[in-house]
Length: 402
Image 1 (cartoon, rainbow, N blue to C red):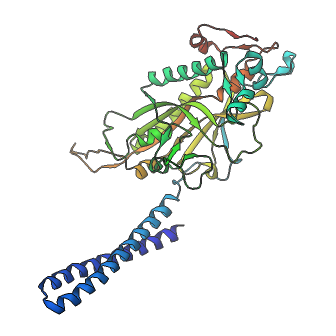
Image 2: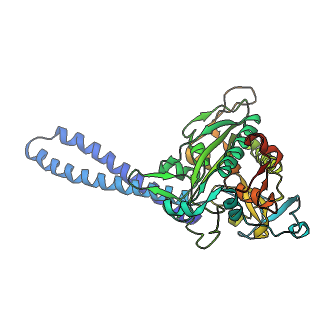
Image 3: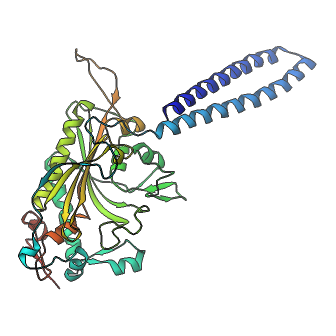
């Protein structure tokens, strides 16, 4: 790929040189025509027409060469930070495990899965979701709707207390915003596209928040800029045929509160650890056992240089499932979206502008309901509400079976 980029850059330079030389020839020829008379001028005008066509063709060649170079450059992912595990999806390393899964056998009953619990509580309706919108859609109703709103509000309060500016973001974005964030709009089957409008539905508010300061120069002298984006998210889940078809683990539409940070590159690693700590704080509030993993290099995607996931234990799956993810994208997104910061030199005078670092992290999302219902269930199908969530549910201590 690097060799192809170097070759494309060489072709672009050659094409630009050829175009500029021909354009200079055209300008000089114009002066010659202006000074000519009679038949000589008529002959020169014919040559001018031919030269103009050649200039137009050379310009098209130069533009195509430039576009090819940009396309190749955009296909190169971010550089991976030292320390990330090598390998693919299954080659993550476990950083730590917090809490222990409940021993339902010792308690004398078999756990129900989140969908069965959701139906008993009148909280989840998959059947009517499919009737209205198709597979992998659902209704949250009653305590299900209240539980999601409570989660999101608790996450928002936590974010605000840590200096985040709350944002309700657009869920439709232009292709240049999607591409700038690091998503491949031409080849990513997970993205919903509205062809008539040339707009894309976002799978995370990270996209809109990354584009928020596109083509701007930021003043970060007072510290990082932190935003908390509340949005509905859309994913086609094209690559998950047959996976997690039961319930709301893997669906086409969900709600999410996403933290997003702009900061100087020197502060990015520390901000990444703060994002992870805030995610763990939320998991502690809902009293879930979880583990933190360091995602392997081959599973980082296009934008992330390092990524940590928090995975909660889901009893009926006998496994940990991702609830949060936080990524350090270093300057990758900012370079693509032209987001820079003002710098000062040692004398306090204005220095050169440079690209900022961007980071993101999930603080709450619909999928959390899965782990909360299953982990906090009671033998009769009711669910005990974690203490920190109760104020956001009007003091409700137990979600009752209908």
